[in-house]
Length: 573
Ligand code: SF4
Ligand code: SF3
Image (cartoon, rainbow, N blue to C red; front, side, top):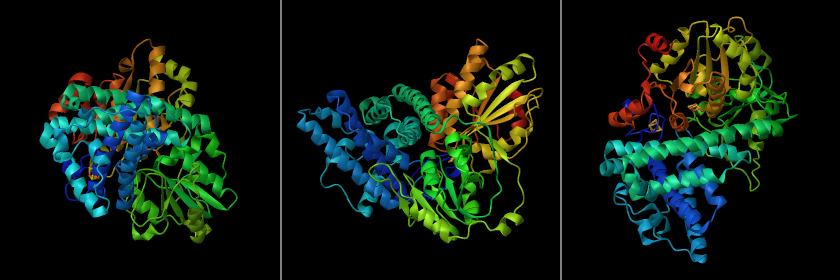
C-alpha cells in the first residue's frame, strides 16, 4: 500500500505497511480501486450530461457518497468497499445503456488509456469489462494496480501529488455536499463540477501541471458553494446558531453518544429517543449542534462528552451507553466498547453493526436505542464522583457574530481590538500539535480568536474572558470545519466596512489540517485569493517542495513554525 492523504501519514512521507490510522493494505487497495472505478463512472456521467443533457440522480448521489467513504477515518470495512465497487460498475453499465438507447455513442478516444493508470485500462473501459473481479481477494489484487505509486511512476512525484491534491479536495467537498443532500439540499452544478474533475483526471489534459492546478482552484470555488449550501441547509432546517452554554458534566440516566458531523442523523436520533428516558450527548465535531435552536430544543440533548476524535478510544471506553458514529473520524474500536458502537452512512468498521437509510431516507435507530437501554448509563454515583467541569460556549455562527459586528468594528477602530485570529481545522494526536495549544497562550488580551473544526478542542474549555470594554467573549467558536463558510462571511463583511480586502484586515489564519475536508477548505481559501495562511503542523506529504514553492510564490502560504509558536505569534501581530 501507499497512502499519504492525511497529515499523520507515516514519517511525513507515506503509510506503506499499514496506515497510522489503522487502515490495512487490503482496505487501502479497495479504496484505491473504488476511486479508480468512480473516476470512470464520473467521466461517463460528465459525458452523459454534456453530450445528451442526461442527469442521473442515483449516480450523482452515489459518486459523492463513495468518494466520501474513502476519506481518512471514515470506513475500514472491506466488505463495504466491495459493495461500493460493484455498485459503481452496476451504475456505470446502467448509465451506459441509457446513453445507447438515446442513440448517443462516445468517441473511441474517450477511453484511451492514460499512462498514469499503468497496466490498467481507462477506468470507463474497466467499468464495462464483463470479466472484472467480483470477490474480495480479486478486487484487492486489482486494487494494488491502481494506487499512487503507478501515477508517481508515470507522472513524477510533483504532478502525481497535484492529481492527489485535486482528488483530496474533491473528497472533502463531496463529503460536505453529501451532508447537505441528507438535509434535502442539492446543487446540480456541484455534481457537474465533481464529475468534470473526475473526467479531467482521466484525460490527456491531466498531464499538464497548470491545468491540474486550475482544476484544484476550481474545486476550491465549488467547495465554497458547497459550504454555503451546507450552512443554508443547517440554518434553514435548525435555525441560526445562537450562543449557548454546553455542560461537559454527565447527568444520571441511560445514554447515547453521537459523534461525527451529520446533524440530520442527530436530529433523527433525538426524535426517536424522545420520551424514552435516554439522554443524548455530543462527541467531537457534533459539539456545535447545541447552538442550533432546532436541536437544542430537545431537553434530552443534555451535554457534550469527551474531546477530539483521536481521544475516542479513551472517551468511548468509559462511556456507559451506546455510541452512534455518523461520519469521520472513527477509529478501529477497542473490545471494551465494540458491542456498543454503531456506524451510519458512509462510515464502517469490520464486525460493527451498520445502520442504513430506507428508500425514503429514514433511518431506524432502534438497535442503538435498545443497546443504550441495556447498558447502565450514568448512575447518580458516577455523576457525584465525576470532577466538575465548567460549561463551554458554542453557537457563534456568522449570524451571531455579525449581530455584534458594530461593537467589533468600534473595538478595532479604537484600538481595543488589535487582531483577530482564525485558528481553524482539525486536531490530532501528534506532539507537534501542542503548537496550537501554546499559540493561544501568547495571544495578547486585546485580541480575539475564532475557532472551527475539531481543532477547537485544544482550548474549548479555557476561559479567555471578554474583549476589553465589551460583552463579547474573546473566544468564539464558529462551528464545524465546514463553518469556515461563516468565518469567510464575517471576514468579507468586515472588509466591506473597512473598505479593504480580506488580506488587509487585522486577521491571521493559522490552519491545522488533518484530513481531506481541510484540503477542500484550503483550496477554497486559495481560490478566494486569501494570502499569508499558516498551515501546519506539517505540510502535506503529497506536495513536493516544487509544488509547495508554487503555493508559496502565489499565495505566500506559510508553514506553521511548530517549534516556536511565540515567533509565529509575533509575526502575525
Ligand atoms: Fe496513512 Fe492517513 Fe492514509 Fe491512514 S489515511 S493510511 S494514516 S496517510
Ligand atoms: Fe476533525 Fe476528523 Fe478534520 Fe471536521 S473530526 S475537522 S479531523
